[in-house]
Length: 392
Ligand code: LLH
Ligand code: MG
Image (cartoon, rainbow, N blue to C red; front, side):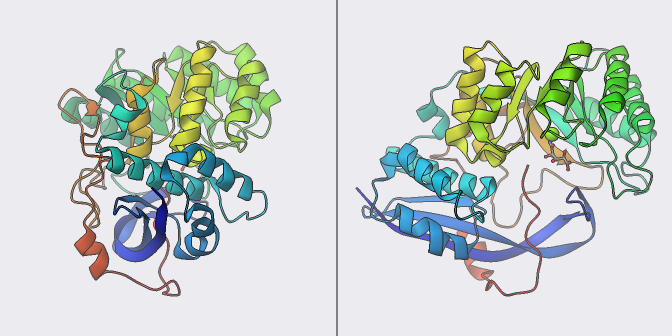
């Protein structure tokens, strides 16, 4: 069997979320059109694998020459080839690598007529979700005050059934951000609103100093928080070693630091964090995510997957060492997370009444793609609309 076609089609759809000048997502002032791309990898026997998110130029010029005529079951070797290409073609970032890797995994699932969680090897059928909020804003009735966070967290837990909540604090360019005291006021309001038994986490501004992070960490300990995430620039592993040594609250990372598996290995070896982190989009796909999960397992270390969506969800079905939660979001009082984008018939991660996400049972990634919508909304690369906000 060999790969005979690799293509990416650009299309537009309606988005209700927009990024601020530093890339953090917030509700859009108005629904607007954004670009997305559908990758298709096809074999000489007519199987097709799909994933979203790599633009046609890169797929046609860089990825297709690597994959064409290859046996799709050599996914591991193909991932290595694409990963090595990153050294020269810097346009292949981790998210693009991840999209192609996911399309290859989807293809394997289609060929084998099995959902990926069965192929990876199940450890569990469902995983509890935490409500992961958007970053703070200045929107009335949104996430503009500690009380807003308290109200929204209460709704997430009491009305929606989430078993845990993670706050993203206020970050520049939002006026007044960053502010450690305001972050802690929001954390205190959320603790007050949901009670003592709900696990709470803080993913704060990512460029606090060591002393600011230490102060925040000590306040989170008083509020019985479950973990403290990415408070400092992850380029400095020494800063994380310094912080972890002084705090009891588990520190989690690295999330966005480059270097894939090797970086995670170094952070474990140097006791820089208590819980390891990484997701498909940070590491370059499901292939490296499983390696990182097994690395954590071999050190008896918890590993929390960054971000939701299809690749991360399938991985969570087969990670033995928790992997306690699925990150569901990013959520906001003004955005309907349950509504699928026009290019999908269903979201991949519906949550049950008890706050669990179940393993998708469709073949491959289990995406329910609306191909008719996509084909009716194709666009050319030069059209002047923004790219879809990157997925977590
Ligand atoms: O800074 C942000 O916008 C968020 O932290 C975002 O990157 C989110 O994906 C995250 O870190 N989740 O854990
Ligand atoms: Mg994070």
